[in-house]
Image 1 (cartoon, rainbow, N blue to C red):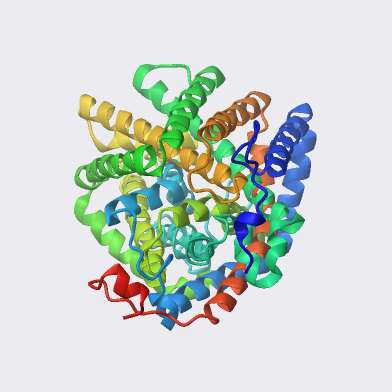
Image 2: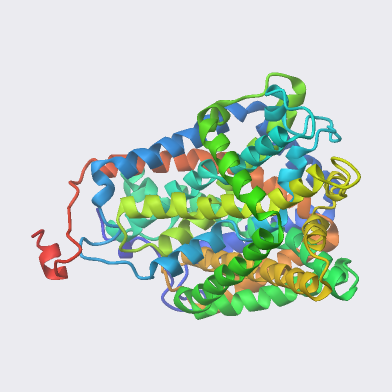
Amino acid sequence: MNNPDKLTNVSTSGPMKGLHSGMGIAAKVMVICFVIFTILNVDFASSIYSGVKGWVEATLNWYYLLAVVAMMVVCVGLMLSKYGSIRLGSDDSRPEFSNFSWFAMLFSAGVGIGILFFGVAEPIFYFDNSGGFGYPNNPHADLAGATALSQERAVIAMRTTYFHWGFHAWAVYVVVGLCLAYFGFRKKLPFTLRSSLYPIIGDRIYGPIGHAVDLLAIFGTVFGVATSLGLGVSQMAAGLNYLFGIDPGVTTQIILIAIISVVATLSAVSGVGNGIRIISEWNIWLSIVLLSFFLLWGPTKWLLGFFITSMGDYLWTFFPMGFWTGGTEETIAWQGGWTIFYWGWWVSWAPFVGIFIARISRGRTIREFMVGVLFVPTTISFFWLCMFGGNAIYMELFASEGVGTAGILSTVMNWDLPSALYETIGNLTTIDFLRWGISALATLLLATWFITSSDSGTLVITTMLSMGDDNPPQRFRIIWGLGEGMVAAVLLLAGGLAALQSASIAAGLPISVIILFMMYGLIKSLREEEPVYVSPDISGKEAAQGK
């Protein structure tokens, strides 16, 4: 293996000092061109992006299902294999962050704002049986005969939600994160996506192929973060309207984007060990308060029983759901619009989340990495989704005017997703100051969860552009941090956010192919080295000597 420092072509002087100048310019041109193309004719751009996304969802559903299952198999296989004792770094390296800080940052980067936005809306959508969008709300429930609004349908609704946010989704992140951490920390290759392909193409990773791979990852990161920010501020604006009567329109949303982008940029400039870590830890503590409210003010006994039952149902049907494909035009449409949409979204976000997960996991063993990343965030997500969605479902099941009359179902079916969360909070307590305080906390968490995703994305982009420097130049973190906010604001004003979201998901197809090659490269490299078993109580010197 050649010395990577001689091949990375990072500028040592001038305005691009610390970055690969060609990559830096190409990335900016790529982003600007896509934004301009979209805003010049939003309808035309949207038709193209949506057409590609729709073709992928309808035609390649089998491919996405098999690809994600393959990633899950690799995760479990490596976790149980003899390679599980290999450290992501030198044999005497140890974790940089405590377990709590590590779990907090994992959760913040990986899910965060998503389960706040969809925590109520998605379970309620699957619980509904109206078929108001041209396909069944939940074909899994319909095939099981649970067509009425009942406890059985509620359990299957939660099971379907777990499926989309659970082990399959995190397996995608785990595979990418492990590949990057292994080749970056153990093999001392640049900390970028291209390095995982070294066992396959060798030093050609430093040429056009490697540049294309990293630019595709940057595309998914920039537009994934920008569209999530643009769509996420709609719920923040709904919260401000609920709390203070502020108009939730475009002006408020633009101001929110500006504030969040500035704070996220400052956090990214301060580094992983400071701003990102501190905000992530605060997110966890505040989330515990919010979850406690949903558990204690809701039907506690029913919720805990519902959680156990729905988790058991999810685990029992884990394999059948992973391989299920729709057999009718309606079920195919549902699967494309939900399951394949989610798989494409997780894949398109995988370079961003994977690089960040790898960045904070130096010194952990492969087995420790697998267990921590695959099981801890998913378990938290399952409980969160059950507390949020379970409360809303309970309200509809036991509504005073009859099943399905609590109002949350109609809110979700009118696709007013931002309001579903606040409506659920409002129904949990009649104490005005508590209702206001919890709604304010949820709105704050929407902002802070996104700040941790945005600052992580900024750090990932600049790390790739600097050819793997885990402490990239601060001035470029500022440029890209504010740039993500500007992209979101421009697209929001032009009405092109949904179009770019479609483009980001369409980009998940080539990224998924790259991930499969990355897995092959990882397995090939692991088979060429013998695992070193290092006792945690021996010194670094002895570990390095293999004693």
